[in-house]
Image 1 (cartoon, helix red, strand yellow):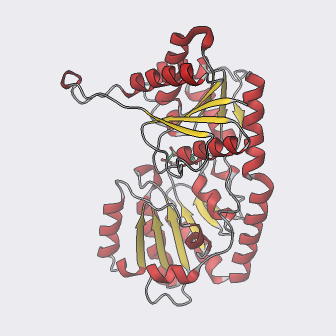
Image 2 (image 1 turned 90 degrees about the horizontal axis):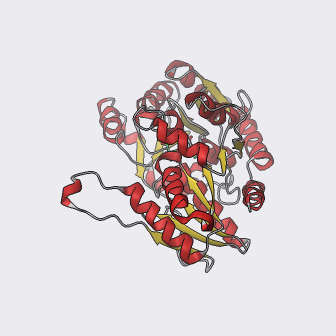
Image 3 (image 1 turned 30 degrees about the vertical axis):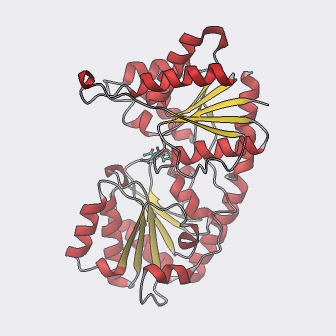
Length: 378
Ligand code: GMT
């Protein structure tokens, strides 16, 4: 039995979902799992499994610290406490910034009693935040000090070596992200879509899921939908929330399209709605992997996305979806129309998407690889 600590951001995002699924799967395999986070991770239903425990990182609010709450220090202290009381064997942190740094601090304090540190990189820690000169030296150091480092795509492995000037013989294991193929399955529920989209007849439905940050290019989602809708009347469902939601809602109203669109906000249970849709849109500026696209493919829904980052490792161009240069709204709209105008082709893409997800991105084989990694370190 491995005593495993897991730290992640409890936000509506792929890294937290992946961390949670790893923890829950390890608990099902009889290991003891301790989540150490600021809040209960999304989709962690605490209490559902006696092998899963949650430890909240609490931060003190001292006036002298002004607006800067020292999260990394509070986290490191909690890691030390949990590692000591629960005799952690492995501490698996998701995101280099600042989680790998906090884990390194904890290890320095714990000395020989310290757990082994596994760092999984997810994207913005490498391409944006960590690569920012004000974070770069400590991010690089924390990556190099981890006992093992993993990345969800070949793209992110190469970006880590390049952005941090790390020699390519420094091992970074690529363990692709995965999806629960039972939860994300082609069994769609068009009737439930109708609850959100009144008067939805046979019109096709486009779908998008994200945290609505600028990197997701929500403006392109709106522009693609508007262009497609001019040719083939359709609907748009958006799941998630974030800073770009308001501008998108405003734009859709300006275009007079708001009654063809529904914003569901942050939702956990949308797989049946996704599976009942026709095309998934992900025109991001960058994605280390694109877990939302994988969830769509698992549901048998073709993806039209940017040809960037790790997306070509997830979406097979011309077979399970289409990829176009970042910002090329015209090309993406044309690809969506191709799929909508040829339902047989769309279904063939969907069937291949499901088959390839089952071949390459199932949960259990990925968990086998994480478990093997933990055992190797011990
Ligand atoms: O995309 C985001 O802004 C959320 C972020 C996260 O924290 O989950 O996503 C990153 O990690 C996911 C899980 O590995 C990947 O699927 C996303 O592609 C990656 N996002 C970016 O690289 C922008």
